[in-house]
Picture (spheres, rainbow, N blue to C red):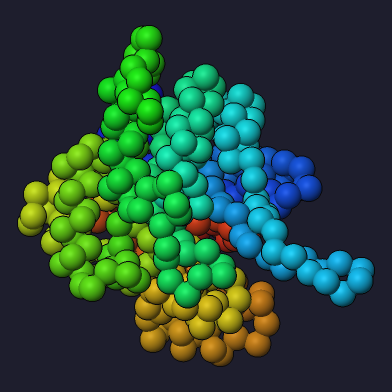
Length: 317
């Protein structure tokens, strides 16, 4: 059953979450521990992020240096397969434009087909660490809609070189991202809405939002989407704060606004434990309001917040 089918079949607001592959050289224990903690809430699917390589400077013993390519979190396909095999929970690996050529993307698609994993989340991805702004990878897809076109062509049985598949495999089904507070590179929210509509018209079965901390921004965004004919599920993405420093860090990283009420409460905290309590309470109220609103599913960004997500889920589900 695909992600969108499981969401539509659910009798109440569904639960899902996102995990990161382990850092290079580490095992899967932390990933599996997160799933063991959160699977009691019947996740309809689990997202696995993908990470591009970085160009970093390595120093030699003689004082010379060289620039090398380093991927800190490899293994998205393998992690997805391991989760799918162990838990029989649908998995949704992220497929990125940035950092990958179209040929590399095709190889990932072939691997996933062999593994029977056919749900994807398509994303442009962030700029490289060493870049001041996003630059398309040479030989890669510049934007998410270009990646979407490649997936659609693959689904129709056409490889990157134009050759035809000898027989059609199970087509990929996919969701894409949306931004209630607009994407950092978009000139306006209206421009973002235009491209969201393009994604849906070209085959995106659902949209999942960037994290947000003010539900009114989500409600307003959904209303604008419906007004221009976007009728697919729009899944809100939530993240419980755990540290007071996040009210400064997250807006810079993800270009989201922290409501003054939340920021004020976080500033009063004198320990991480107090900050975590505020974060859990705020996220719980967000999730309860969204559930009352009738959202089809809530997607939790669980990085470094597994126990907080668990507490929120206990309060809501």
